[in-house]
Image 1 (tube, helix red, strand yellow):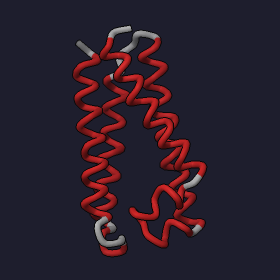
Image 2 (cartoon, rainbow, N blue to C red):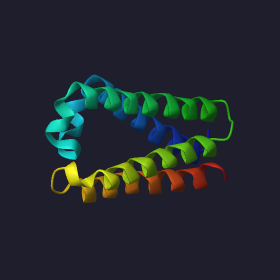
Image 3 (spheres, one colour):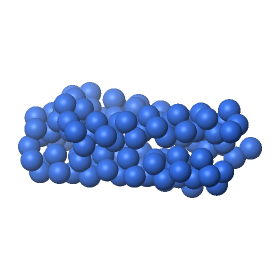
Length: 124
């Protein structure tokens, strides 16, 4: 496996770990993002769904990479998820804690840029 593919698998694995953590402890991971709302059952339902998206999407990317199939579509879907998280955060900004929007834009934006860079390197 090329170094670029190893990097892609590493990034995808990190996203799986994040998703698993969201499923296991959604309020703990998202308190700074969502504030006290993260403690409520309705928010935890959505957060666990987000965690499942992360696990399944990125596991598919790892499987494709290990089979030597294109990983770019999986990373593109990951970027789409990051962008949707950013858009949802901006749309709901009035109810979020101070600093949540810029922090989310920075983290999700950096994640999206990393995925774009890895996708470009993995397909060479």
